[in-house]
Image (cartoon, rainbow, N blue to C red; front, side, top):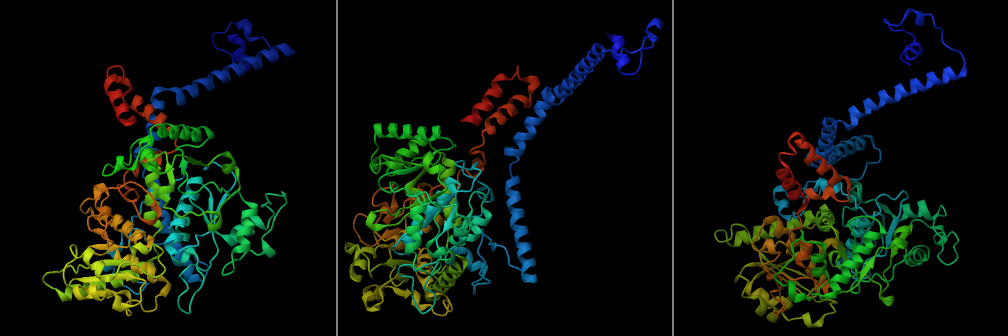
Length: 638
C-alpha cells in the first residue's frame, strides 16, 4: 500500500525494489477506486490535524476564549466608542448637508449638557444648573431581549390621554418604554389639540416633538425605532397589510388619508381599533405588566409562578416604609415591593400579543381604558438592570426640549440675580424658594386653600422676606396678598423680557422647571403638575448627592396642605394609591447602578465565555489552584 500511495502521487521512493519500479498503474476500475479511497483518507487526516491545531489545541482555545470574553465584556467599551463616533459623524454630516441645502438628518443634541446659544441664552455656565440628565452611550446600545430577534417589523400605536399635559406626558412615557421593552416600532400620534394647550393666536395643534427631542431619541437608540403616523399608514395601511378584525378583509384608512395632522382624530382612532390588537384588560390598578429577562413563552410562565409565590404571602405597604428594597435585589423581592397593597395579577405579553403585527393602546374614559399611570408603577422588569435602564432612559431622554429648558434657565438666572441683589451678603448664591399653587379647574377641592392657610402651613420652612417664585394657574394676584406680605413674591409673568418670543403654550413646562430649582419647594397635593416637579427634584438630588439622596428622600420638598402629607417626601415611601397623582422615590433612587452590567442582558454566551476565560487563564496550574479559580468564578456569579 505504501508503494501505491507514492504511485498515485506521481513518484516512487528511492528505496523501492527495482522490480517495482517497472510496475505500471492499473487501469481497471477497482484500482482507481482504491486510489481514490486512499487519497480521500489522506485529505481527511490532514484536514483533521489542521482543525485540531486551530480549534482544539488548548493554547488556541485559551487564546480564543480570552479574546472573545475581553472583546465583549472586559474591554467592552467598543459600543460606547461606536456611539460616540456615530454622534460625531452625524454632527459633521449635519453641517455638510446644511451647506449644500440638502435635507439634514435628525438633529443631534449634546445630551450630556445644555447649550442655549441658539435659543436666546443664557450662557452655558448659567444653563448647566438645569441639567439633571446624563449621556450614557452604553444605554443607547441596549436592546430589549423580548422580540429582538423578530424578522418582521411590528408596531405599537397609541392614543394620547385626554387630560391635561402632565397626564398626557405620563401616558406617553409609559407607551415609549413599552415600545422599547417589546422591540416594537413606536408610531407617534399625529399633531392634535391638547387640553389647555391652545393659548394665544398661534399654534393650536401639537405633536410630542414640539416638547421633546423624540426624533433624536429614536435616531440614537439601537432598541427604539420611532416613526410618524403618516409613515406608518403609507407603509402598512395603504399597501393592504392591515386587516379588519371582524371581516378579515384588507382595510384602508378613512378616505385613504395618511396625513392626520391637525384633523379630528376620532375616525383614525376608530380605524386603528378595528385593524389592531387592542388589549382592553391592560389597565393600571388592576394588573402589573411584567417582562422577563429573556424571550420565550416559558419565561413568561416563570413570572406567573413568581407572582403566585408573592400572593401566597401578599405584602402590605407598611413593610417598605423607610425600608426600600435594594435596586439590585432579586426579582421576587422587587416584585413584592412593586405590588405591595396594590395588585395581585400580572398583565402578560403573551404569544398572541407578541405575534400581532400592531398592538394599539386606546384611551377611552367611557370604557375606563386609560393609561393614567407612571411607567414605573405599571411596568415590572425581571432584570434589575433593565428596570434601571428604563428609569434612566426616561430621565435622560424624555426631558423637555432645549428651547423650553433654556427659557427656564433665563428665568432662574433672573430670579437668582434678584434674590442676590436684595441680600448680597447673606444670599450670595441667589437662593429662592418656590410654590406650585393649583386652583383653576382642579378637581380635588380639598386641596383648595386660601393664601393665609397656605402661608400658615409653610411659614416654618420659609425665610421671612425671602424671594419666592410661584408657579400657578390662578390669575388674580390679590389672592396671594398674605404670602406677598411675608415674601418677595414673583411669578412667570414678571419675566416678559426673558420669555420674549417664547410660545405661551410652553409656559406650564417652564413653570415646572423654574419651581424645581427652589431651595425649598411646596407643591399641591394630588397635582400631577406638582408631581413632576418632585421627580425632577429627585433627579437633581441624585446628581448633586444632597442630604438623603441614598434613600431617595427630599428633605426640602413639601405639600402646602399641612396635613399628614406635608412631609411625605422626608421619608422613603413605596408605591401606593392613588399613585398617578404623585411621584415616588423608586423612580429616581440609585438608578445609575448597573450601567456596566447592562450589556450582559440577553447574552447567553456571557457565562460560558467567562467560565472558559477563568478556566483557561492559568490552565497549566488549574490542578494546583482549583480553589482560587473556584473563588474567582463564585465571586463573578454572585
